View 1 (cartoon, rainbow, N blue to C red):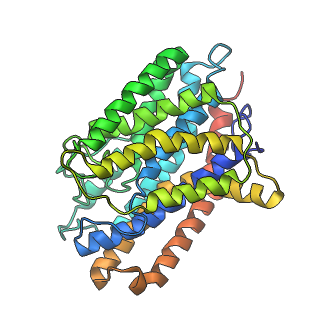
View 2 (cartoon, helix red, strand yellow; view 1 turned 120 degrees about the horizontal axis):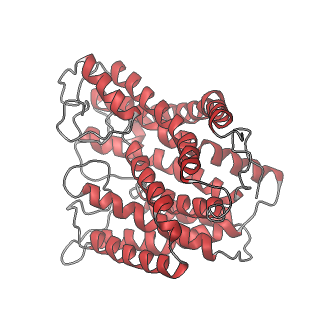
View 3 (cartoon, rainbow, N blue to C red; view 1 turned 45 degrees about the vertical axis):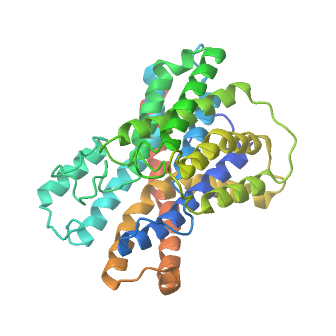
Length: 384
C-alpha cells in the first residue's frame, strides 16, 4: 500500500498500489477502445475493431469501486461516519471532475459549430441548458431538445458521465441499504444480481448483441445499466469483506495483460438461442474480474519505479476517463470530415489524441481537481 495525495481526506486509508495502477490501465484501454469506436462511427459500421470489448472497463471500474468503498468505509459507520459526511465525501471526490468533463464537452461542442451529428444547428440557449443539466447530473431523455448531439446519450456533452450517474446510485444504495446487510445476505444479493446480469447479457435482452448498455435512457438501457452497476459494485464490497491476500509475484503485469487480452477478443457471433458474446462478457464480469481484483489487492510493488508507475496511473485514471471523450467528439468529427476509417491512415492524429488526453488529464488533476478537493474538504469536512 502507498501514501496518498495531498488532496485526499485526512483520515483516508492507504491505497492498494496495484489496484490504483490497474484502474489506470483500464482507463487507457477505454481511450483506445473509443479510438476504434470512432472508426466504426465515422464509417457507419456496427462492428468495432481493436479493443473490441473495451466497454467492459466500466464493469471493472464498478467492481473496483465497490471493493474500495467497502474497504474505506465499512468499519467507520459504527464509529463516527454519518450519511451526510459520506455523501459529502463522495461528492467531493467525484463531482469536481464531472463538472470539468461537462465544461470541456461544452467547449468541444462549440468548436464543432454547435451542431448535431446530422448537421442540425443547436441554439446556444439549448446548449447551456444541456450544460446545466450535466452539472446537476440530470440525464437527457432521447429526443429532448437538450440532447444536443442527437445520439440519445444521457449526458450529450460528455457521454461517459453515464457511468458516474450509476456510480452515484450505487453509492446511495450502499449508504442506505447495502452496508447494513450481513455478509450472508450480501452474498445472496450478489448471487441474484449475477444471475440477472448473466441472463440479461446471454439472452440479448438489449438486442445489441453485447452488454454495452446504460449510456442512454432509451429502451432497456436503464435496467441494463443498473444491472451492470449492481452486480460488480456489490461483488466488490463482498470481496472487501472476505479479502485475505495471497502470495503472488508480478500481479500488476499479469492482471494488465489479462485485461488487455479480454478486451481484445473480437465480437463473438451467434445469438440464437444464446448470445455467445453476452455469455463471454458475463464470464469476464462475474468470474474473471473478481479474480483480478483479488490478485491486484494481494500484490505489492517491489521497487520505487513500479510504485511511481502505479501511482501515476491511479492518479490520472479518473481524470482521464471523465475528460477524454470531449476530445473524441472532435476526433470523430475529423474522421467524418476526412472520410478516414483506419488506424494506418490516422495513426499520427491518434497518437496526438492519446498524448493530449493524458496531458490534459494530468493538468486537470494537479491544477484543478486536487486543489478544489482540498479546499472543499477543509471547508465542508473540517472538524468543529
